[in-house]
View 1 (cartoon, rainbow, N blue to C red):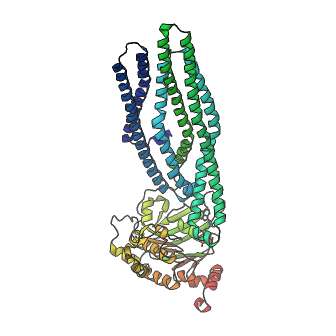
View 2: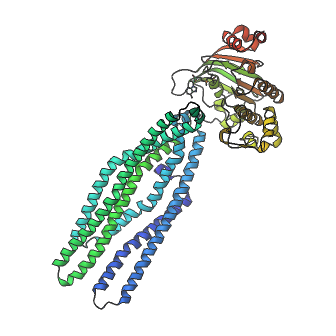
View 3: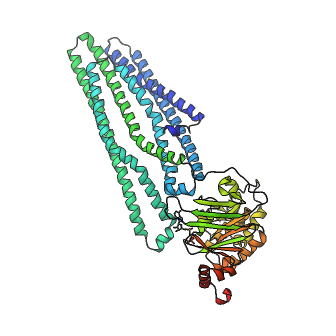
Length: 586
Ligand SMILES: Nc1ncnc2c1ncn2[C@@H]1O[C@H](COP(=O)(O)OP(=O)(O)OP(=O)(O)O)[C@@H](O)[C@H]1O
């Protein structure tokens, strides 16, 4: 928890200070009340006391009670403010940290766990801070102050209070032993529930199409029941506390009065009034002592869950990204749009098997290199090494003659227009999805550029037919456009960036042959001098490429043009024969 405290801003420290001042004021006022009560008791018992005197003390009592109430409201207000703005800071820091992590770390944590950590875990800490600021400071001050006030007022009463505290402590310890492990488990169970909910919602169409609702419901039910049982156990255990505290306080008050009655009975007539007044005061203060202990217990019980949440957040914040930024912003002079793979070998972190083995090729400015091979042969893995989604295990990937590891990531990304295998659209408009991000040129994309990119990506027709045209709304994940339209907007986004190198990871697969062909020829025509790296399953998509690299189980088994490979590479010929007619093969 201490590690996270550094995220408190100076303004929040001031607010914490205010909180503490008003907690002290509140405790002081609370502990003043029994004094006034004792005074009233004394006045009532003393013959000849004026009613005015009693009303006067009563008035002070009301002022104290109202002052205590006002202090409590102020403390609550500042505590909530500090906790909320602290959570906001931590949430923002966590979000930025997650953005800086590489795919390796994101996969290690899992997306659903990162979501829970950024939401539920932070809420746990927020709740803890709100309570801690109100109770953790108040309880010890109140306990010590109350003990000082009652010390020396009666040995027997002190024993009774001590016994009650001891009994409560034993009970709390027993409950805590059972409850704390359950509190610790809560966050992991919440992770699990988030994962299943997310999986179900993102795969809803498949779930429905395969009549798998029952199967999904069962999975959800198991996770839900586990979390509910866990929560019920802790809540039931905690709900035992309040009645026990109430009974203890009532028994303690009764004991104090019973002891007091015996003491008064045995005392001289002159001492009776003093004893009676002490008894009234003692019963009030002893209740305050017990209340203070119980406040500490509440904090003590909330702490494990908040502590687990803190640990989970710190785990993310302390993660050092495996992809480290280099210093360079530019490649070699006079080299632009060139990509070289030098003896590249790669295996995924924690995996045993090498996915790519000794890959070598160079693609020059303006050339198109295509990658083809059976599924799982490593095509996507290969091109993901260019924008450093993963780092090579051995060898080098050079962009413009410089190792990608030596670039500032931002500068490297500015050179690249990446279109993923699964098109990603964000909630917004067509325009906001195309004019997306920053290409390092410090100028905003103009309407002309957006329209041109959309036109090259063969999207003009359908975009202009949409309601609102370029400002037509795009739903989250692009659920209101077709798969092919999504791919084309995604391609337009890359074109709008005006990069040096295009990376198309099977990005034409949802387009019909005709659109695919027109799009590629337009792209070649309109973006001359830009290098393209294309992963494709269709020979038709890559037939005109300057260089085709054929992959088989992570190895390059053929390199050359379509014609050359038809003659020299069995794997390529096999793929070609399965897709093209005899005529096209000639
Ligand atoms: N994040 C990952 N962690 C571990 N292994 C992975 C990961 N991503 C892919 N793989 C493995 O790497 C191999 C190559 O996958 P890759 O996606 O590069 O193939 P591909 O040739 O692009 O296939 P496809 O044409 O089906 O998209 C596969 O065996 C896959 O299981």
